[in-house]
Length: 134
Length: 163
Image 1 (cartoon, each protein chain N blue to C red):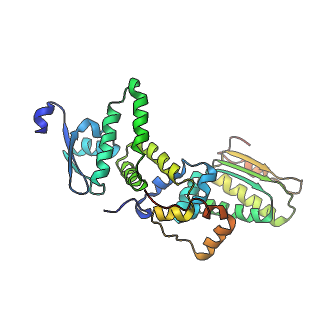
Image 2: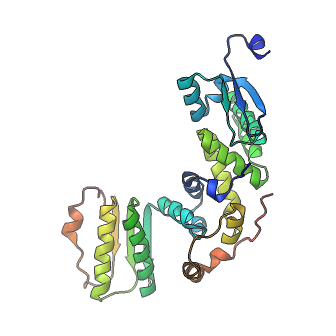
């Protein structure tokens, strides 16, 4: 008789267990295995990012790519940048993330970046059907 | 024997993994969505549950009985029972949780998942892997990147005993 092991623990059950942890407690669990990472991402329908450095930009990008590729639903997307970015490369990433959020059904969107050099793609955002709060 | 003592009540037999049989009133098992469907659609009177240990089944039946007796006046008592119910060694708790998930006993499942979450939340990644007997399927590069990004995840409580 097999006991409750990783391979017989169904994905939905991992997701359920993770949903009983607060975000800080749940975050380390994504490292356990790919199945746990997926389950963790599913609990993170609310994406809240605060960016301080270039390194953070890379991390956000990686997460957004996973959400894009696996079409995980996003309820809330809050992005806040503490420092100013003025490179076109980063702006393209901003565009890309907003695109992913909108495509994955974001309902609440908050996007704060200091400075005026980034042109928020307002028309693209307003065209979204799922959005209810901006 | 069962039919003579229970009159009109329908009787159902559950067969645990080690072939032990449990005879109980059908109304009790209706708390399980899975069994409810089996009983309603297929009109079976004996249900084999080979993936569930008898020991686990005994615990679950104990819960079903207590839950069936739940009234507004013994709510407190039931809450205490629930607390005691999950106060077992971790390995047993996992067996119960997996079985309850399979049987789809919703209220109890919520409670078990909360209990499992409470037990693993302070543990290190390594400890949780050992508890669930999971081998990491990340590449060594990904793994070392995780270690760099979230070193605290690898600290935590290293205790991986399931007792």
